[in-house]
Image (cartoon, rainbow, N blue to C red):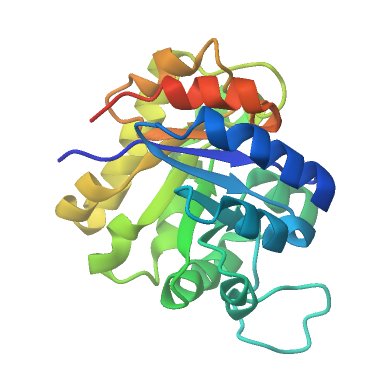
Length: 252
């Protein structure tokens, strides 16, 4: 089955409204003829401005987190309905920084993923192992737990709607990149985990690689059989470099 490549840029906590608008305006002409789907994952405060800036361009706008509840006494949180009101297209869930720095659990993601889908949002579910887990041979155990928990309450017929981003934690922001063999093994394992629920949906599932993806290593990673795109961190803050990663996406 042919899967359309998907390149998403995670801006993390970077960008005032003015800076976000400047970045997206620099990016849009560079990706106008892109052979793939594109999204930018934007800080909450700049979401509305970026949504307005990209209208009609084909570039999607994602939030970087959300709460599973529709409303309630959850100070500092944002619901799927609130994101939908801004015409946001999707949301990143379970990024390793949310897990490591803010205590996000697999149980919480078990609720968030279906809540986002039910609200009409596209979802990028992030999974990945630490350096210690890889060195101890626990990569597959960790990925199995994260994928199975995150997708547990997603109906089988909707599994292919969830984009899964494999991000080895030891490669995020470090300059280290998984070798093509390491990346392909993990990406294929993630697809096999989805296939345990539904083989047809596993063929639909787009699986991204993330972890120090840059213009000079993107083509090699994106050519891997089970790599359907990239979740890009720091390089997405540079319009020219992010556009070069987009250009590296194969046409399928």
